[in-house]
Image 1 (cartoon, rainbow, N blue to C red):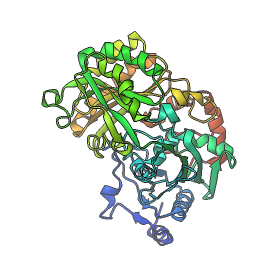
Image 2: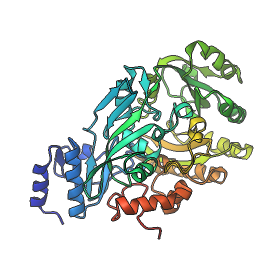
Image 3: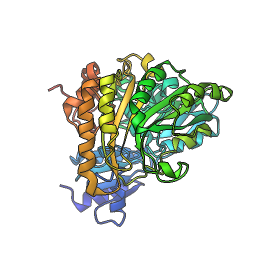
Image 4: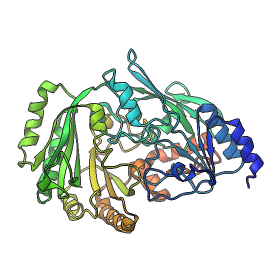
Length: 460
């Protein structure tokens, strides 16, 4: 039990802002991206620096407090916040420093990918990340990180050079392929199980202007589009990335009025190759099946990264389900049509992200992220602004997932999982799980960092 003296002693030991339930900022400070999450921590520390993080870890351990780590707050299951415990909020630690000579980027643990894109774009560089710029760097990276650049440059973790980590005992260590190699292996896909990452060092790549945008077809064309997509995408140049989606058309520009709110299928494309070749690359795409809408062209990479930010702002209700997929069979496509054509709300969607190319060239045991033989990562997302529809969107997502799970690789991208139990965690890491348990036993034997897709320090 904490007393006021303990809290006050902690408060004066840090430079960041310590927020409790009686503070004016408490309600906004405890909010995360998914408004379906409603947790009430005992304390929230908005850390100013690494010293604050160390103090917070020590305070939680010494006082037996449940500890949650918040970066961008985007986690679908709301694992950046907890009830009755301490939240280490890194959102003030947003520094980004680009070294254009070495093509590396040093990023603090509270930065968003929008922060990184803004900094790197000035040098004609980019780091592989996701598809929404408000996503936190820390959470996406520690889960693996896939998005528009994955086929060409790999996962985010494949571009991680080193990380500074505050451990459960309060020590700050650096993890790389030369220092604390087992920790470096574990944090590349093992989530926040091993400590608080206060900074990341990434390799960046020459990406500035891309040729990108959506191509949409009527939902009654979904079967032929998916069949074409499953054949076309794996054979395409790794300069080309496209994720398939079921979606309802947003009611506004740039979409024509006759398509507003209409359920459609489509692919959102990103081409990073020479712009003079773009017309040739997109010719078979635009010639397939007479699309109902196509808006592709050159754009700055940060513009593509922020394309969905306004459509998917913080504060919506979310229910996620995911799986990795090795092949897209006709039987699976039939189930996709059954459920994907019946989106329960305007914002609900299903995405299939390609995770082949450079992702597949890393060995399944080289990082904690084990699904190197999968071709797609699927996410089914029930989304709506109104809590009254929570059960509706969750039921649709669960039913959709249940129908497709028999056709999956058995595990999911940890960043697309709700709180789904230990069997799902084990299925995600497969034969890397025991090695992760060994790393957990070494680096966090008391399981202080357990508000996550948890890897326990014992196999039983």
